[in-house]
Length: 407
Image (cartoon, rainbow, N blue to C red; front, side):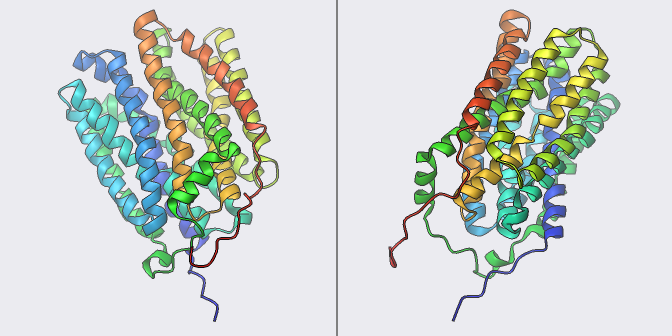
């Protein structure tokens, strides 16, 4: 007698709860650049101190993301998301009250990084991969990524308002209460298959799936491209507000530019996810990376005005997280969904190594040279590199030898 398939959540429920969780988690983190100058000036720290803590945050996010993905694939995502929400709140409280650089790095860096691992794309995309048909998977991932983008648009002005109205410490405490809302939303993502012992049967163990992926050239190329994505977006997200203020533009221009990135990213991620159902994903990724290099080059060439900043923010917003649904849909198409959260976590780990390098190098080179020009130039070169390495990616499902019974 054939085994009954595991029941599925409704697509509307998955997208609504997943999108709301990503909106809060990604929205809060996108505004961290607004705290760079208030915290460093109040505490007497350097920009490198702040940048290093955020760099550790991105690295911790990547490291913990692998294990969060393993747990979510094995036991379901509900517990992972609730735990992530609690860590997020604790990390924001610690960030507000940290008396030293070390404590700030442990809370803003490691605690919040671990929290983001359990409340963002890798875990939510694992649910989408298991609960939504392959014919709509890339589109659904685009919806979730667009939600994260909307969170950036929504939360950056809110965070700017909180800082100006209540001070940077109280603003962080308010945010810590807001992220606790992720916990109740996680109940909408309790996968019935895991609860009833009907989790998808796996042809491979975790180690077999990991060994297969790490040896596969296309997986390696996707990881290389994602490294560049992390370098570019986190450098810009954290350091651009200070870059603009150094050039004499008002703090409002910085806040509005980050909000515009979030707004246009809503459209960019949705469009990329939709196109991923119709066009070769490798070509979409190559276009995104080369377009980023062109946009950064023009931004540095033209005179810096509020208008040029807003145009740049809009263009970069279209390209910002549009790599996310396409890259994750490629991983799902090549390797299947049984270990999707874990494999997405490994690809994202590469992204976060790039984030670590980008944000820390931005602070380090600023303190050494008094400007960000060198890091802008590196971002341009890396965009060209990422476009080239994505073109050879093979998107077809990997051919596996049948596993003998009892193996």
